[in-house]
Image 1: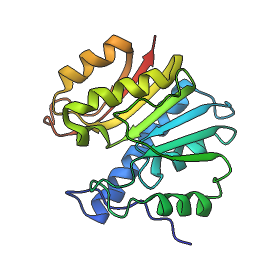
Image 2: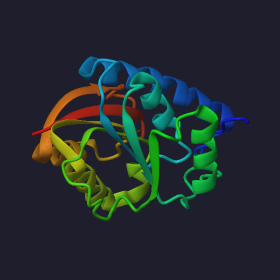
Image 3: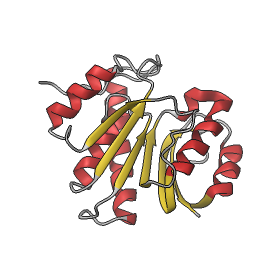
Image 4: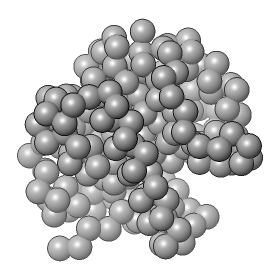
Length: 192
């Protein structure tokens, strides 16, 4: 069974694959900067799509349990269905460690202070101003000292940074700050 992570909107399959390759490198480096590979973590993939970051985190932390959430009906990622995401988890052999949930990030997760690590890639910019509700929902789901690693486009990076500072401390930023407001960046925040 082939594993297909989809094509991002306003992109091609080749460009989407290149972006994922770059994101995997950055996310892996940041996750290993904070946690050892033998860590037994509870990990949240916020806006999992077809499970790209879920697969990356599962390889980095083979003893960890993952919860992957998405609405599975947004046009920002082609073919993003719950069924296809589940097929990918089975093809990767990680379905026993992953719980897939259909959930809107802008609504409370009701999973307060549960996760050690939350990860997300190219999700929140699609939410417009509602992204702040999503950020808050994810921060509430993290344990104190938990880490959020967020790869996205930040057209209003100052507002996002200000919001992150309300919940934690920005540990690291990856990406070219001079590349323009729609450039891809990765931000890591440690919850207070």
